[in-house]
Image (cartoon, rainbow over all chains, first blue to last red; front, side, top):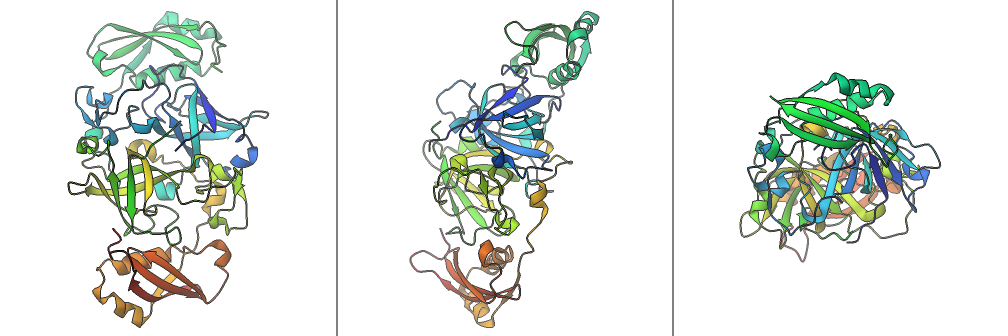
Length: 235
Length: 235
């Protein structure tokens, strides 16, 4: 079956590194879903009033293509243990389809046609194939349990800021500090680098270059500077 | 993007008429997801132990193809009111993609490779494009609200059985009565026929032909007989 994007998602996450592994983990993470022709008709979104959360069916467009493998090594299991791809939310899967529940906070201002979102875990430029309203009566069964293997939560990181990095925020949007802190707290490190102490990381977030390091399970934000070549709002 | 079924769903619902409009409404509704080559490798399902619910991303293969329209008339609104397709779960949508949360009750016996399911709202033969575990921590936000328009629940139907129809169950599987009752109670009538009193309906369910009528908002099961041309388990 041939499917076509109805639009594209613009988000604070400009690369896979740094993007949260699930939606809602970083509530500050902004997104905008822009519908493209012929779907950019505001009537298609009428009736979403009052709807707090929507499902996005998306394509994992930035995941390297590789031959089908029945198992993956999920980061939640430390990256050492294999399990079936259908027991995980790994992006390495048949058809490269992703599913993400995000908060809907309103319509984009015309002439754009689309939705403003929060809690996004998708990277900038993600193709979107469908939008569906979240139906809490149907889709939040009270007796649901996740796979046994997925019950081990990652501990996350404590985040501290160097005084020099805080000073660099002076001219940045007010929400940038919370976005950076929550993104690093979710521990975006690849599993194989979790054991390394004094490791240094860089990521681009909402139009800023962010440098941080980890020592003793505490992350230190080292510096924050506007990224070259893009306006600092990441749009 | 070209996507390929990983397998097909076999269910009690042999046609769109009668199939519940949401998953979980008829907990008795059985389904089997059979993975097809090259995906029929049991390793791909390993790690689903303990997982009570899974998402299926499917194709609405039995929905007539028609040109893109931004609005639909959802049955929940009585079929008279239009609203945006992205505010509904209507099958008439771009890319014909469906999303369904179903209960997983175990692996199929080899040599089949797949999952036994309950609470299915999909018709027999539905192509499945992905399986993802349901993650209650992430996907059941406590403050979620559906679209305003979707808050009006359909009242459903009271279901009574004619003595002659009950007698016909003598040789049927024990669970058939509960399946038929719950399916009719969910009121599968098209919106334009809801006002008609003394209306008669027929549907094929789990290999049986079921005749029923509605008078004064009570449904009467009139007769139940094995359908010709298919074994009576609907498999």
